[in-house]
Amino acid sequence: MTTLSRFEIHQPASALEASQMLAHYGEDAGFYAGGTELLLAMKHSALNYRHLIDLKVVPGLNSIDVRNGFLEIGATSTHRSIERSALVEQHQPAMAEMESQVANVRVRATGTLGGNLCFAEPHSDPATLLLVLGGTVKIESAAGAREIPVGDLIAGAYASTLQAGEILTKITIPCAKPTHRSAYMKFQIHERPTLGLGLWLETPDDGRTFTSARVAVGCVCPFPARGLNAEKLLTGSCTEVEKRLPEATDAIADAADLLDDHEGSAEYKRHLIHVFLRRVFRKAIGEALD
Amino acid sequence: MKLSFELNGKPATLEIEQRESLAEVLRGRCRLTGVKISCEAQVCGSCTVLVDGLPVSACTLLAYEVRGKRVTTIEGLAEESGRLHPLQQAFLDHFSFQCGYCTPGMILAAKALLDDNSVATDAEIVAHMNGNLCRCTGYLPILKAIRQAANEMRDEK
Image (cartoon, rainbow over all chains, first blue to last red; front, side):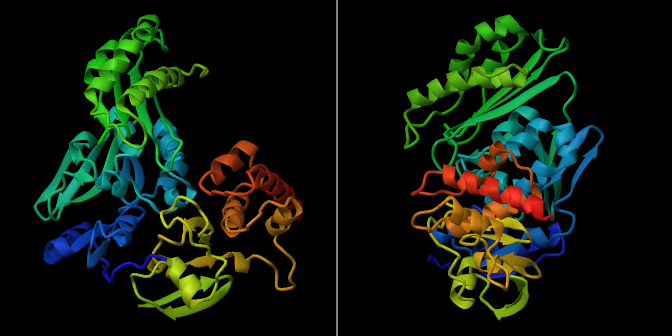
């Protein structure tokens, strides 16, 4: 059994105190939010922290609320608590469904959404969907607070743009409206997903036309990517959009840095995007999958 | 650190190191070797135990996390009389194991499901159990056992 190197766990009373603790211990310290990824990295000595600052004990950091048309999810909310939240189910069902399929029941019981986003593991689900739902994150430090889109949080594989002492405290997602359609699907045959695909559409006429679209792909690339050029192709009448799905596939694939790796070749991943774009479109508009 | 928690229904207080996983504490200090170690990456489920009724990977959960909580291992399932838990009996009835290495984790994961949802459909059982891997039996005997236990647990209520 792998034994971790020695470390000391600290329990801050507030996000500000957590930030000060991190500043105090510097590179010897890391935030500990769920441990599902951090502890694996520490087992393999990819990270060697001597001080863990336990954000789970910070009061109020795991709340889930709706305010002014936005769903606000505290950073230390577990995947399970989001999956089971009546508020999330009611106001952003695509988010609840995606969370119900993250990893496995054990990871969902302990892993947190904030930790997941900060860790930026490439083969992960939440960030890809949050990109299309318009999710933002609140980042706090002794210097103050700022809010940035989820896309600006992720710098690359296993890398976030957080500066020393900054803490992600909240994830904010616009509530779904009756004119919105969204869905997330993944393809997985190994421990982690090979492909994740998120789609958000706006339709004023119950799916006959789409006036706005956002699409993002993850897992096939070092970090989730919006397919901006594909999004133009996904607006128009439903028939037109369906015809343009192959073209949109290429635009998504070109926007992502498709990797040749143990999950398959870049060409194979382009094919997966092709298959799953059609499926996720059907799912988003409520049609049966083939 | 001093760790106080409830272990299989009884209070426990131990002196542990903060770096110790729950599996290290349960196996090494409490001698509960029904907690099986395999992938050590939260993928296989063989080390599944319940913390406040929820399944966790003991291999990657710090024992620090169970302070003040209820921990259930496979050793805590049978009654004092020796009568097996309906899930244990059902796994025997359906021969839902060969080597048995995954079985404690399978049974505890299934217990978490049935305690929460005693009318789970096959699809719900499969979705819940898909993070517990068995390399011997194929999964059908496991599904059958969980179905049987669900029926019995409903009848007992």
